[in-house]
Image (cartoon, rainbow, N blue to C red):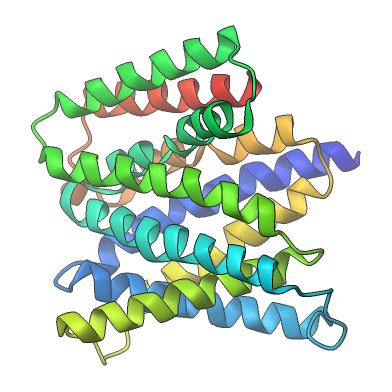
Length: 281
């Protein structure tokens, strides 16, 4: 029963991440995507800080070492500062459905880095999944879209895959505190970057920015709950369906912005299927 509940939570996490794509697309209309990223991550961090306070982590913190904090801070620079900025910049150019498919290459890059750096084994499913993913990305690139946007999303996928190595090495007993450290590191770097570049930060309230940060936090929290109840081989593939949800929701609610075509659907399905095969392999 617990495994089934965990699988449902992973699927729900995937839905919330897909829903985040809708809010991000609306939130970034007319504003700088980097400033929008900073706002979304700030909302996410505030929710996470509230969780850490409520679950008693701050009153009874796990053992912290300089090494673990440094590793998580580096992960935050790569995942939150680089990865999120690249992702949302891509969304602003080519839309959520295509951008999120590009970021799902994080699974491919994680596997590739595992083989190259950790000596993990290459399997037939890994090779087949990688091939499917490449075909899916090629299908998306053959649409009449700005190729820069897809390239940015794939770079974001690489950043997420690389960050996973540092997260795994620095993970604390408290997952929420580990996530908070990486988020604070990413936000600090992004704030410095925004100020240095003189990027205008929107002062007016945006319900879409608030909603985006909230559903991003909710999806991540549900995902970690899922991992505590069900095997990784079940939770990760189900949680990686977020590009499919982003595409479906985009078609019904923001088709005028996304311009989803048959090629978009085919590219998303091929890319996600490839990612799932890589996970299973």
